[in-house]
Image 1 (cartoon, rainbow, N blue to C red):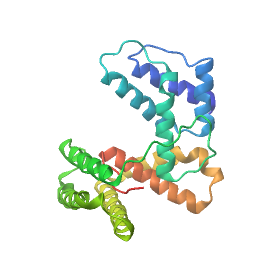
Image 2: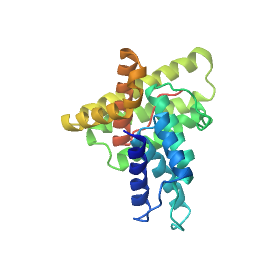
Image 3: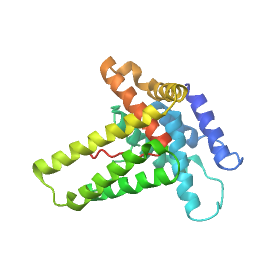
Length: 230
């Protein structure tokens, strides 16, 4: 996608988020958004960052004035950084990319995972076929929470390895519940996200990044948490 087209898409999306109020992406704002495109920020990742800003904005009450794209910069870069780490894409660090936020402690992580698993089931984002798996994982995580803060050395490493295995199982089952068309759509979206980085990646890392990108999209579609830690 050309930078000018990327900026037009961002402008159109921002207009929709602002209930039709057009805020032009020109001048310094154009330079800002062009910088996202130059860094390889996938368009849908930029949209997710804009969504994150609007969610926080509306959390404080009714909309007071149209949102400028400049206000969304930190959220867009945060989501981009999360995406890069999730799919394993390595890029040159730009001065505009913020430092990664503090990682939650292991007990905090386990608590958040249990809450999100419960919310996913209650919200209907996953089917009844997941009930047995969710119950089993939640029971295992509850037991892990009781001792996670005091684990050290090999015991802690074993728990972290177990969390990674549970995460793999959850995503594998989620993939299996999707029909062929949805899986094809998600694979196409993953390929689109990785387009800016294809030429700089060897086949094996690119294949791993593609699978990780598909997993991320499956997780997002089903509202599933990341069980793996670290």
